[in-house]
Image (cartoon, rainbow, N blue to C red):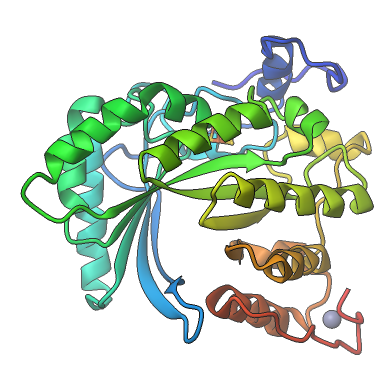
Length: 346
Ligand code: SF4
Ligand SMILES: [Zn+2]
């Protein structure tokens, strides 16, 4: 459903319920794309370092972007709603999606390597029963058998509310076989309190820390998504907020921090940009973020390289700079910056 855009400015003081901000965000959305509940939105096979430090071993990660009901949170920067259903995910659909994606991956020639991980990302929360029907969990978990690690994503509020129920099902599913190591990815986005409050995530850093504690107490690993250059912050403020956010994420027990460049594309972020409240990071900003994260040496830090070209302003050096970040992701070691005669690498 699309909403006619009002010309109201961004509500700088969000109401406690977030309803005013939610309306403002929804009014700026464009149309969704058509999705098929029996097909994943996409899949990828990538490498990620899994043990180290010297030499780092690589795991092969099969990532499936599941098709399911839209996430009920309406975060200011989120564009994942574009490829979701308006209604509850049909029973059995997620299992069919996984089967079809696995068949495509296998027929694409990806070999069964030693360390194999499965990421099931669902543009929302895996523990949301409207997105992933609870009755489907046994069939879904059965398909994760044989993988060494299963990585899911979830909003911290649902981790707090539903983790025990999920873990009960997880334990029952692997009574007679070796379970994959479980990891849950949660979006902290930023530990800068005033900015976090404006993202409509309806979560504080204390809420996040509580959910992280629960994961740790249940022997579940934590992966944290952080925004590079969230709205409302100047460049200098953004890099110091990122430093604090990485520190906070690792203090919460994160195994991995994933750095996601903030971007336009959902209507709301365009409006913030026009109002001078948001500037997309440049490629150099993402490089600064990656350098910072690795220099802290607290755990794995990955720069998200999806659609990286949109942040580049120079055709001459983009390929080398992409390759540098890719190698840093795999090696977890800093590399010299690319020296470009056209743009100076900025
Ligand atoms: S919780 Fe995650 S998926 Fe849901 S709206 Fe927020 S950013 Fe998007
Ligand atoms: Zn250049």
